[in-house]
Image 1 (cartoon, rainbow, N blue to C red):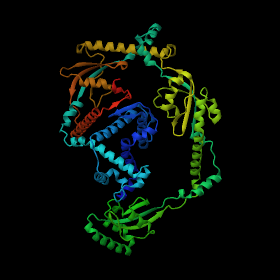
Image 2 (image 1 turned 30 degrees about the vertical axis):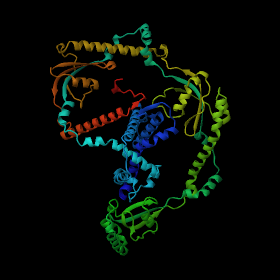
Image 3 (image 1 turned 45 degrees about the vertical axis):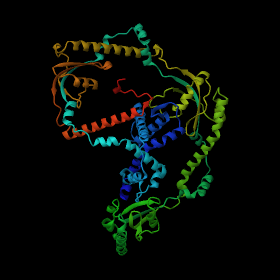
Image 4 (image 1 turned 90 degrees about the vertical axis):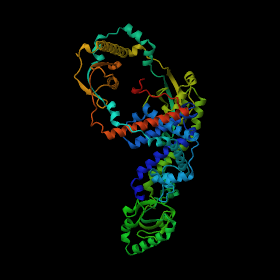
Length: 634
């Protein structure tokens, strides 16, 4: 186990974080949400419990950060897409749903079961000490206490109980012929395609100015061209980062702080040891194992250089035995107390007498020590200066925050008095009621500031907003200079773009008309204009758009040849001559793989059905609009 922890330390730390993160939602988020930016409007409700916008934003940020850690080169726009945000909300809803379901089903986890699962859960090996206790050092690195971790793990186990029917069902999945299922899914069809492309009809379309004006005045067209509501604002930002730039700390103060806090800069002492573990699983064998340990110690006293060899032969620690008992470097708190006390009592090269722990009897050899020294001032000067400047800037921020709030409120017709009083710079920008997707995070994307800017009173009076806390140690006040309601621009500004849009639309209608006329002639109309025959399937669409491919593969095949017509709007009209059916390619998906995939699809369908039933039972409702995707048909 020790070897596994050392080798996979970073990976397991990440795994531990990912494991405990969902439980944070179960037990921590309802209390936490009261302290962060959020509105009274719920993004969703589960069993009457609200999921606030603030909780949703937090879940999205955490999910994005996990992806960035795993894929540093990921496109930031993908992480901030409507689909990514919806996935974060879906995950939040599911986590809350499981918690509510566990509560309604009165599911509990006894201390005995909690302890048993913790000791056996391979995902939590990094969170256990060699004795099986909670590793407080690892939890501290994650910013957690032992009590908080236990509570979150208990809630996680309760949620797993909700899903137990799925685990039971997975053992009783029906035997399905993968070949039969994939024969239907991957059947091949021989087709000839004729595409009526709107671009071929564009020259036939002319649009007069009168037609263009009438077209643009239609409500649905106005909505298409509507520009979002916006406001030109001027604003002031009071923040620690800007204040820190003006803060200086003298060399004397830096040295004085170092001398007064020298203990902070001690490098933690770490020790590297080997051990031989003789487990005591049966208390009646304790004496025998101790005697064996003493016998091994006698042998090691005569030949200390044989420690690694004897560890490989006799140690019962599965993780370190193969490596000669080597445990690598570790600090205080990483091992059980009897083991740690023995290690820290040794000098390099010394071997301990047999040491009894909860695991059994250990013989320990100290290999080396490192750390324990105080880092010199020159090595930590930059660190101290950064810390002191940040602290002084925060103090200055606290001193100015009340004055900032009071000034922008008491002199509401201008930001100039506050700017002069506090030495701030008035900035200008254009903001939208709905920030554009992918817009860089900053004070102007704060939901609270946007709400204040577009409030009826601010727009009507053109006065300063109250000071809004847009982030930790950041405060903003804004004033509207000019407000633009959501509206379509004058036709003169977009005339040519609208003309091209209308021409493209009419060309698509002509393409559809030509295609439909040809479809009406049926197979008897001949095959002029059709491309050469090609075999298509879902695995090999050969360039056909997905809707066209699906329409062709679902078309009746009892009478061939047959024609299938599919209107793709601005993409044109597709006419497909279906000529012949063919079996799926036998080697595309081997039978055993096909059967496995069908079983997985069946299990996934069962899981979706079960979760959908839970959602209906607990009245899950999403209030936030779902993103529009190509597959949604919206």
